[in-house]
Amino acid sequence: MNQESNKKEYSVDQFIAKLEQAVTFICSRVINRSEVVEQAVCALLTSEHLLLQSRTGVGKSLLTEQLFTVFEGANIFRVQASKEQQPDTYFGGLDIELLKTGKIFHNTEGSLVESEFGFIDEIFDANDFTLRALLSLLNERRLIRGVQHVQAKIHTVIAATNYLRISEVTEAILDRFLYKAIVLPDKEPYLQYKISQQYLIHSGNTIENVQKIHFNELKYMSNIVRGNNNERTISIEPKILYFANLVIRHYEFLKNKTIREANRGKNSHEIDEYYISPRTQAKSIDLLRAIALLHGRTSVVFEDVFKLYFIFSTVGLPEEVALFYKSYNTMYASLSTGSGFKQIEALLEFDTLLQSIAENPSMLHQPISTFLDTPLTRTLVEWFKEKFTNLDETVQNNRRILEGFIKNFVPATDEIRELRNTLDHQLQVILSKIQH
Image (cartoon, rainbow, N blue to C red; front, side, top):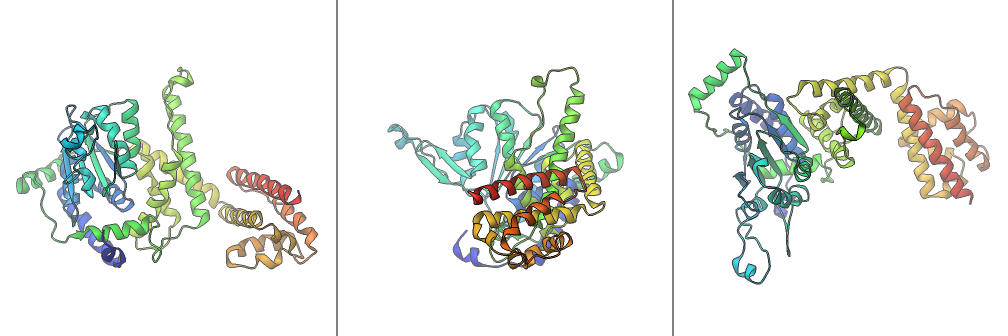
């Protein structure tokens, strides 16, 4: 994208209006797939990849093509994977003259490397050698082959498959697709009737959307969602971010509990447990901001956290979505009782205070009241005032005040107790370093 398009600003409200029209258009063409379409939109906004799994003839290709026809100004790479293919199918043909000298160099023009969108049909029909070569292209957006290192233009790749082929390489490929969905066949008579109606009109072909969205506009919104736009930001309160991580951890626990119950009688090393990597957990922040943007907000709210199932569950499997919903409800109900969220807010502000003292130990040689009176720590000040009548005592009392805050803190839940204990440990480490 050139410098001029980088500088151009777009209206979020206008983008949302056009996107809503586009989603309505796609859903009118691809019947009963609104949840997958919403998930795909989130993949586009977060610049991540989507894997669609289903049996043959369910409409994966139609869904993908209708999604891509909404946009203009973007190159689309399409390929039907097969075991005979080599990496040059995706990266471009090899330069024969350079190959004679022992150098691998691809002519990337027209390849996946030079395309903003990609559609790989039957991705697991590709051989492991080719899939391994795709890993860095999908994750780092770089072609790394021999001496050739090229920055790719890839924004989002959608892949389709009729089956999962499990190997070390395919597991790595699966990890590159942050969003996953299973598209089940529609057997309900009315839905089959609506699908038949669409087929009578369009014969299963894609049709152009009247109102197009330029790729530069999508890129601009994606930069906001991914925190790469300094002028326009979507904020997330610390307590909401902490809540999101608690929900994710609880879901991981419930998922593994379900897996262990289904494999009762097997040894632990025989069970393939569900694992959420720190990278995936970190990327969930982008999805939270994407959901907020889709609702026209400049900040994330608690309700947005539920939509994280788009990443951590497989859309199309109701039992997985229900499990995530259970984790969300369990954590929200627990922290909404009493002063749970207020306690988390106070402890996270205390954490901010500790980090400031760690970075600038001289702060501890001032009365606490001199550096607490800021908007960031107003909640924390209230807590201090409840426990200590005089915050302007001698500097020597600062340690007693900080330790007293943690000691007198009565957690409302086990999760808050865990946070308090962690901060107590951090406080002792910081005080010990300053003392020595």
